[in-house]
Amino acid sequence: MNRADKVLLWIKLVLSLVQLVAALALIGLLLEPQLADGIDRLETAIHGRQITLESTLIDRQGNPIPGATITVIRDNGTPYRDDNGNPARDVTDRNGGFKIKTTVKGSYRVEIVPPRQNQKE
Image 1 (spheres, rainbow, N blue to C red):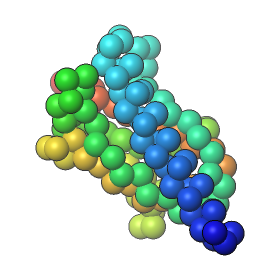
Image 2 (cartoon, rainbow, N blue to C red):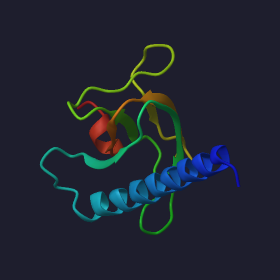
Image 3 (cartoon, one colour):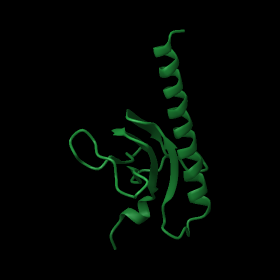
Image 4 (tube, rainbow, N blue to C red):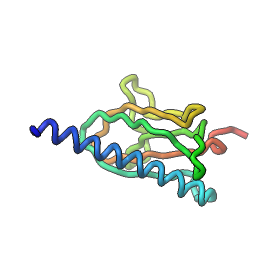
């Protein structure tokens, strides 16, 4: 296995961990819906790399969660930007799926805002 293959394997492992932690974070969010800011967070670090976060949000029964907003943010709370300059975020589709592409420098967090908090009253 050459160096490039090892780096690619490491990146795949990190992204798999990100997906797992995002799913676990959502489970925690569903078990404690009265969080102070209504947002659950995931934090990891990848330096100067383009990432694609692609996963499916599900509830404890395995049902998809449509309409949740997923955002990749910096430590200071501002969102990373995609290639078009828009915030690096996506809203889960009817199957709970989302996909976000961005380039991160330093650590980042993934914020998950449940559908009920996305709706304006």
